[in-house]
Image 1 (cartoon, rainbow, N blue to C red):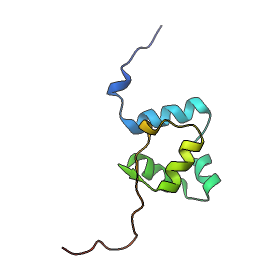
Image 2 (cartoon, one colour):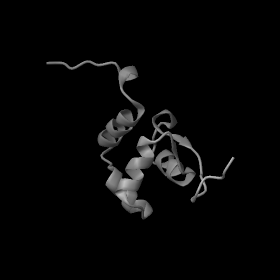
Image 3 (cartoon, rainbow, N blue to C red):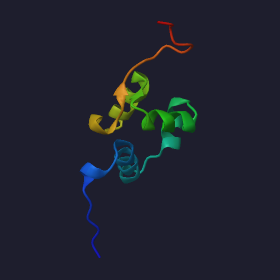
Image 4 (cartoon, rainbow, N blue to C red):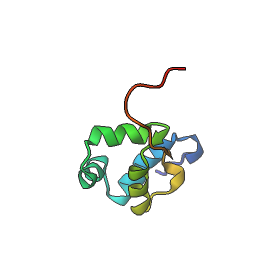
Length: 82
């Protein structure tokens, strides 16, 4: 039995999870390498943006930039009022 599916229909974060599995890597392992909480790394991977430090780490592992959220460093804390 052969499974066929269109990768264009698969969400970006699911493509990233598939890439990790093919590479034999995990969110937990990447979090451990970077000294971060695995749930934090997972949330960043599911968001539209991720810290540039994490983005660069994924790129160094060979991840395709199209699989990753946009790199963006946001300041922590409350949002400025308009």
